[in-house]
Length: 328
Image (cartoon, rainbow, N blue to C red):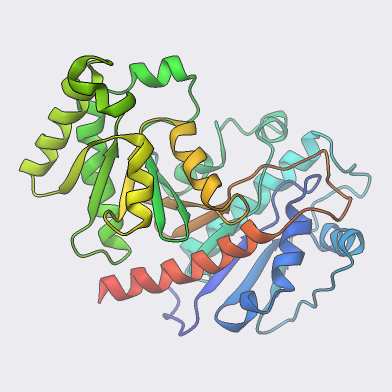
């Protein structure tokens, strides 16, 4: 492993080369904040990045030594079309991720910040992963990493994510909640929280109103919370979902366990639609990502905002510092 660097080094993948990933990467790297407190290694294709600079009017100079540096895989067909699902683009995006993981596992970068990929393009290219996170888990031998949304001082974990609401409700069980709470506690400790305070969002209005508005909060969530508390975890709930996220923003809790996709996503994106960052914990390194997709409909137009990409890069560096401090 490489020696610990004073400044965190963040590996940045450019995502699907036909989407807005290359554009938001070059825009983010042009901002002063992304250069002042960390070093960046971009894993991508030089031609794609030059095309993105042309579309955005932003210039980024890559250097042989220092930051930002480019690992040019030169793996994108120059006939690539903006804004379309293409197997060649999926293959390139998959190769960017694979090389980035190699760099992180070898200690040449401390963390990863990833631009969005197209799951369909990845699938067409022969990668059989449900998504970005699952691919990273498979490549690192960590098959079940945790996803945490971070926006300002709000942190949100998810019991379920890409399920229909009907399916998600069926997954709100005592056993699943009791199993994930210790993992959340461990993940928060790894980034510097000495005794994390976690809240579990309620499923039903008013946390079920004593059973009048549903029994799940009483029969599934509350017993799981009590079980976790008996194991020394500082967890509270079920807390009505219309209050718990605001309470966490105020500092009452360090994180919230959201029970389904939109419950947590609506809260995070209402706070700051463009600044929310997705964090993957439980890998051998920190990984952050934008909270948006490839936006094929605007790819190549130079109008994509880079707020989330810039926030992801900065968060990767900040979380790396927190992990280092917690390990001391």
